[in-house]
Amino acid sequence: MYCQNKYIAVVGCGYWGKNLVRNFAQLGVLRVICDASYTTVKLLSEQFDVPCVTDFQQVLSLPEVQAVVIATPATTHADLVMQALAAGKDVFVEKPLALTLDDALAIQTLANKSDRLLMVGHLLEYHPALVTLRQLVADGKLGKLQYLYSNRLSFGKVRTEENVLWSFAPHDICNILGFTGELPRRVQAFGSSFDRVEDFCTINLEFANNIKAHIFVSWLHPFKEHRLVVVGDRAMAVFDDVSTDAKLCLYPQQVEFQGHLPILHKDAKQIIPLPQAEPLLLECQHFLHCVQNRQQPITGIKNGIDVLTILESAQASLTTHGNMIDLKEKCFVS
Image (cartoon, rainbow, N blue to C red; front, side, top):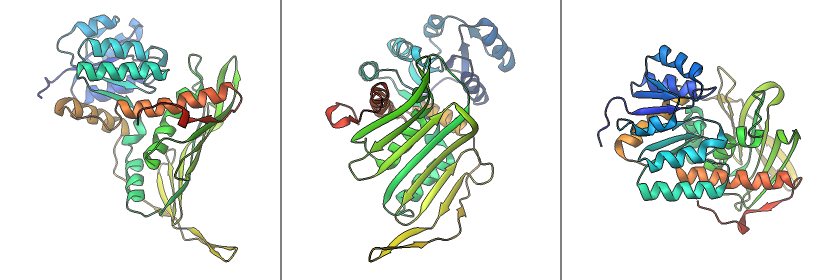
């Protein structure tokens, strides 16, 4: 399928949307941008020399717009995605796909019925460090996976329309699912809130293959930390997205037992070389490739639904002060 040069609309030009505007403008495919704030959208319009509107319906009415990129507040995602699909547009929506599993399943039905592509903005799936780490695991460099943990911590940005679980944890959940290859059996979450919006949260995940994982997210933390640790029985790996010179390190260390006595084998860490590329640019290029070639995205609707299944279960546990949620009793798409 051939796409005309400028066929992308970006809807939502705030904190993250402006980065999407920059990348799609750089790729030469940006047709129009939209935001409810005229002041916001006008500034970006002038900066990137692209038409702007404040009415989403105007975007949908443009026949030259073949795909819509949605970066609005999470509470609006489901409605805007449904409208775009119904208008015959392919859609790239920032995480989370929706705020309820029912909405996500309705989106899936409409996307299938309308034969439109839908991609969820799980950015780190396109990060060179994570792509390389997945290959190390696939090649057996870490051995059998045993444990994963992921920290996403910073001071801000504090939100009022969604808690830190829904704002931060989709990235970490998506990352972990990519390694386990399955949804967890059980989910448990704890957190603390101010005015009913949780500011920090810990999530425990138990998988049928005996892999365990935990996630810690907070926007009330004294320093920034974005770190994923993957532990295998042959080696361990750390993806540190805050580091500037050692984003991915392999630790060839393991524990062996002589009888009941644990013996530690520890070697020097290895810094894994990575290609230099902006993950967001790679993600945008992948979306364009999928639209032009009618291929399903890496982070498509099934990926979004799996992440949402865990988010809903974690929220249910959070609301009940840490009750364990058994996913075997839930119906989901995987």
